[in-house]
Image (tube, rainbow, N blue to C red; front, side):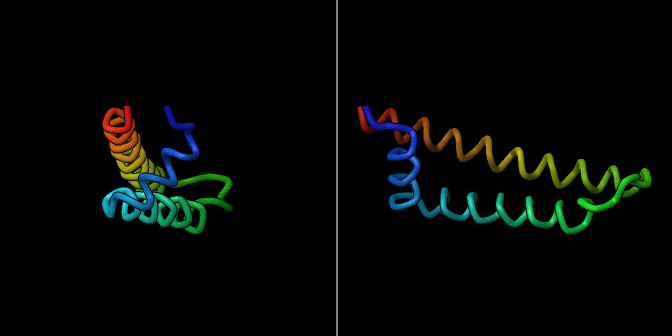
Length: 76
């Protein structure tokens, strides 16, 4: 069985979808930090915008995890 890092590296090599999701996840993280990172208090609209971006980011991470599980199952 492969280690976690090896599995991730394999996913990066083998899966275009994984690479795309990883890139989009990183971009959302940067966007959240840029838009909301230095604000002490958020308006209700900003809070909603931040939560929406966080949910998108989490959905991408969930799909990446699913792809890793699928890849791990094929390696066994």
